[in-house]
Image (cartoon, rainbow, N blue to C red):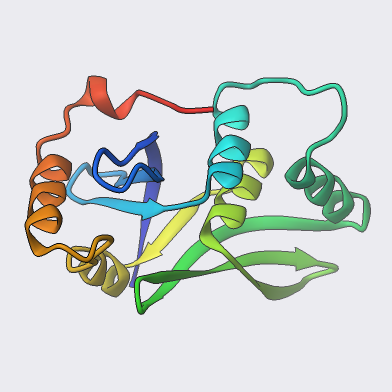
Length: 161
């Protein structure tokens, strides 16, 4: 089963100093972090803040190519989590046919934002993400989990770029 999620924030992990996308399900029951690279975080932040760049960025170009070919991005889905690596699919339609394209979640999310497509996460991935260990230190992992559990809405709104 897939759960629809929204981006609630983009921030720097205080332990690893890596950007994280904070997803929250539409009912407000689950929060899921996805660690991403700085360039991917920047691409997402630009779209979240509706910054217009003088030339199309990569995700803008991809959206425009998909659209000009007559295809439509229906949704993206984070489908798996293996060895602390998330996997995603971009679901598209073209001439009545549905197809899926493998993608990194950060790229899929950046594209979904630009195409105004919904973001879904497999329920099993949400559960697996609760056990993710972004650090080598168990003490740091516990501290990170507590930090994620206590984030409030004002902190979730912080964005990086």
